[in-house]
Length: 225
Image (cartoon, rainbow, N blue to C red; front, side, top):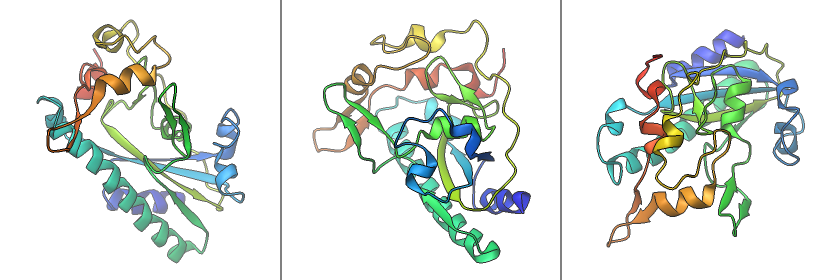
């Protein structure tokens, strides 16, 4: 059943899919544990869709910004459809979780937001990769290019093995190339990042003016050297 569920999601367009059990979320902050959202949760299914490498080859303001947003929409649609199919085939409960927004937590002074759960930590728990010095999630094949979504289920599914470290030892390109020094190797200062990254055109279209930490990562291009 575990492999069948993963194949359902891969057939719906996911590039990666993994499964975590609740034991791997023991360090989640209060309010952000899967069981805080769905009390009967026993397993967490995590999947991702990768952006095309081409969006990293151009100035990010419009093209990257547009498709990065659209990738969240696509992941939400995929996980919604997968949840319905899982319930139909196996009779369990499947709760799709938004890839990004909406969420409740917002620290106005620090401009710090938190999703309903940390998708990057969920992806680590599902064996899909590890965190980089940018604090972004890294996958060996797709690097920083994945947009992640999750499904909580009351079915007990075997967890996938955890990943070996993905961040390249000795690499600090993301830290050195951050134009506002928002990275320290473990965390990102969201206020510095947000003020530098997000804007609008004169007509009011949203823009993304910086994606350097994603763009310079060697893993973004599937390299390990």
